[in-house]
Structure formats: C-alpha cells, structure tokens
Length: 248
Length: 158
Image (cartoon, rainbow over all chains, first blue to last red; front, side):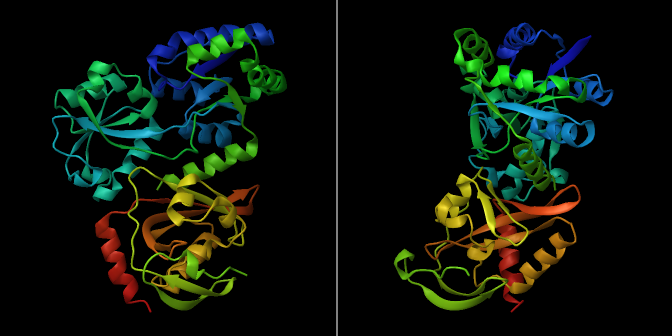
C-alpha cells in the first residue's frame, strides 16, 4: 500500500526538489511506500484532502485547522524558527509609504493562499479598509503578484514573507515593503492522517533526530530548514484557537 | 489579588485612581496621557484560564504592556484595565464569551509605565470536548477612525 504525501502549494519554488529528496529520505528511514504529489493550486490539494486521499501533509495553518477538526489529522513537527508572516508590498513607484495611506478601491493582488489573505486583510485594517473596500486580483503565484505590482496592474500585493524573500534581487529592487507581520506563533506543520497514525511514533522519531546526522542535515538544507521541532496536540490546539480568533 | 501600580514605574505626570476590578478586588491605578502608538504588523497574543488569569503571552504583549512575561503570567488580564474604559464594555465582553461567542471591540489598555495604547481586540472561548478550558485573545492595530469613535462612545458610558 502506498501513502500519499503533499505539500501546501505556497512553498518556495526553489525548494521543490527538496521535497522530493525529503520524501525519498522518509521512505528509506521508515520502509513505507510514500508517493509525493505536488498540486499546482490550493483547489486541487483541497479536493484531495476532502476525498481522504492525503495521508501526510506539510500544511499551512489555515488548512491545519480543517485537517485536525474535520479529518482526524494529528500534528508531527514544525520547522525550527519558521513562522508564517505576511507582507504588504507595493511598487517603488507608488507614493504610498504606510498602510494607513491606502484608500478605498485599491486593487490588491494575492494568491489563493488562505492564511495569507486572512492575515493580509487584518494588516490593512488600520487604513479603515475591509474586504468590501478592495478590488481583489487573484493570481496563481507570488511571482505573478510581484509582476502585477511592477507593471502597475495592482496597487498592493499580499505575500507570504518567505515567498517574497525568495524573489530575485532584480524583482525585489522594484518593490517596496509597507509592512511585514510579526505574529511569531502561526506556522506550517507536518501532519499525519488517520491511515498512517499507527506509524506516527516511528515517523516522529526519525524527524526529530533528522538534524543529528550529516545526511539528514543535507536533506533539511534542501528544504531551507535546520531541523524539526515536535508539536504536541496542545500546541496545535493553541494555534487553531488563534486561527479561530483571527477569522472574523 | 492584583498588584498595585508602583510610583517608581511611572513615566511622566500621572493621575491616581482606585478601580474595582472584576474578581480581582481594588487596584491603585497610576496613569498618564502618554500614548504608545501601536506598531504596524504586530499582533498581541494571550491566553487566560477560565477565570481570566493569564497563562500565555507573546513577545508583542510584553513589549506593548511594558511588563515582563514573568510579571504577566499568573496575573488577571485586568492588569491592563485603563480607567477610561467603562466597566460596561468588559461586562459585555464576559457576557459574550461566557455564552460561547466571539467578542470584538476597541480597547484602551494601560501600560506598566502608566501610559496607554489602543487595540482592536478579539476574544474567543476555547473548548476541548465541550468543556471551556481557556480564553484566547488577539489584539491588533486599530484604525484611528475607530479609536476616535470609541473615545466618544466610552466617555458617555460612565
């Protein structure tokens, strides 16, 4: 029997090979047949989750809530020092310097990433803007969001901070950061589904010991991480409570 | 019992008043007219037990309140209660969350140094297996328009 592993589609493109390397490493360490399926968009991944096809997932915090509450998933680990932060960005040509200067009717470019849209919407609240005051411009990738700002097709963009940081220096030079969130306590999580739960102890042990040897460190490096930290169920419930608090 | 504010902690000219805090007795409050602007991008996060005693704070809470984490954990959340906030606002908060609903509103919070900062606050009750185990709160930067509206409204509620 083969298990299905997937990664939230908001990962940095540079780390795509890293997830395949990680999957090979995990299969070797656990003797489990695990197939990595990378979905092009959130809709495709959401459909796989809803049809109970997913057994292991590196989930964004928004999906993590649904996975625990509705699909019986449990948390395994989060990456050391990683938190999901969001940035509001505009073109360097835009005269706006602060979020409070944003006005009704602005066109906001964003991706389907649900956590980023939610936090981005909170970050523009100080300018008295809510979802009905903005002109939404949905795009497939963060690179397209950046390009829409540079071309003047959108006024501001919502970025996962990690995605913005990985843009090329040439693109970043043409963009201006209005705000970067400092939430600290919301993060992606590697989670395990009901069909794999009897292997949780084995998988968890391999993951938390992964940074203790050269091979494991190399795999982590290909993901842009330094190690995994175990998430207990209380910690996950705490994050889910916070997500509930943010969804207004 | 909540600790009184200390004269040596206060920065600037202050006024003194005694406040009856819900479940925590009377507290000596020393407060100034110095506002700390809410920084862009920060979210203040905290949890309390069902009695409103702080069990967790994040770094933004520490920075904005002026207290250390050790000073906050174990104290009632009303350690932030500013005398300009009408008690009816907090009554509404408790009535709402005790029903199991989410409460949100604009709050003027008191700092350790006697100053203040405005937040948009959201509070939710946290249940595990149908049992209330905690309250979570996230505070974020409010719009100035909403703060001005709140100042006008709260001044009529005493």
